[in-house]
Image (cartoon, rainbow, N blue to C red; front, side, top):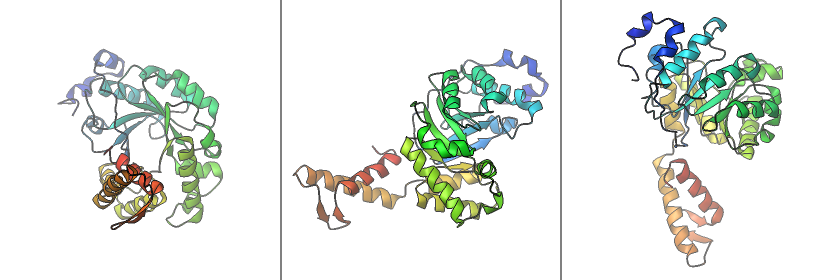
Length: 309
């Protein structure tokens, strides 16, 4: 926990928050293992106080649609208070701002000097907004976006012109509305949803952007959430947005690399490199059949995802 007790906040007026901001700046997050991205409401102080010890690979502190306009400043100051006292965190910490013309620019400017890893801008539509966000953003922070508009969905493969733009999060409910499609079609096996997911995945990968699939909002329906995760992993996704710890545990398990896959990848890497040293890049293996360079590169990808290389 960041604070041993939150009692002092019960009587702390909002205008006095800045006097209590700390000077801590956690080290930059270096792991790129992103299985789970947990959304957290910064008005929930008990949850905010535990962001330094969460099992989520990523934590997104949400300033946008879950926060009433009258409480956005309170939520912003809560984030600043807690991250400025956070010395370490195993999670990659992101702040989701409002759209740039609706308070997002001011939020980025206010938060730039505090210690977290990325800003995630909502409702992005085009390259001009990406450029504006990057101009505002401190050079030591990454830029993520919420992909929620038909304009961004259409142009995703062309939106990345700066290496600091690294991640796109699919906001599928808003995207469906933007496309003029009913949210009732969001069901496993619906071909339109599979098309939306597949195009998002391939366009993001084409652009060198990490794609994170949408948040399933029926928090207590863990079986359906698990089914979505399994379906998306078969499609090629590596990450899922999560509402809380129960979903985080499921996403971490499903999007992790299982030991059988790791053993296969280690074996292929070992035997291919041994054969390649003898000038042979294609051969029959007793355990896994024919192995050549594409099979070897896939094995390296599996090992890289698990941080073994």
